[in-house]
Length: 210
Image 1 (cartoon, rainbow, N blue to C red):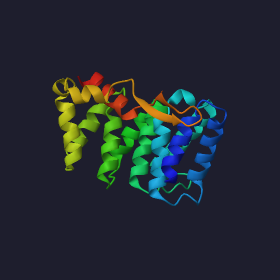
Image 2: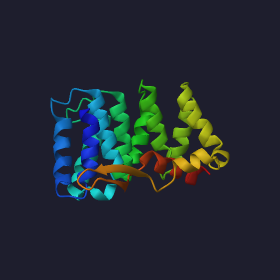
Image 3: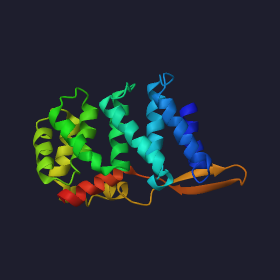
Image 4: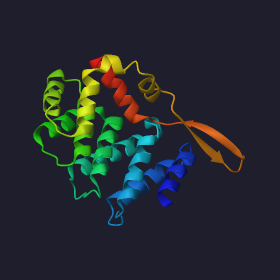
């Protein structure tokens, strides 16, 4: 499938000069009228999350932050193909510009987003902001949610001292995440580290609430 090939290609060229140019072209594609397929849009965004932050040029980081902001808030004419794309945009903002988290939290507090998955991602990231007063307001609102998945997140936060010692959680937040890539010219499988953003957010929640 084309979307799977994009991820493999970016992993294979991320050490070369082609990488930055490819990222620019993907940003152009996402903003174009050709961006019609929800699964492809989401796969590209997931791939951008996968790649380590230090692989992006300063210019591309700025462009990706603006893109993610436009996807989440539907600004500058960007109309995402799914609410999942908006949820992924939240993670990209966390990954590339943590200062945007206050704005994400304020959006959750002021909005009434209808999609439960999007609300969960808004809560997940908003609970990491440095402002304790904002975090308390997010917690208060989140505890009133009626979605089962959000209720489980609240249960995790409320009992985080117990859950952080569970082996599955410790494995999930392990910092040395790797992926295997096949290099046909060398007939070799190569281990490469990738950026486990969700794991980093979970670890930050444990640090804050544990």
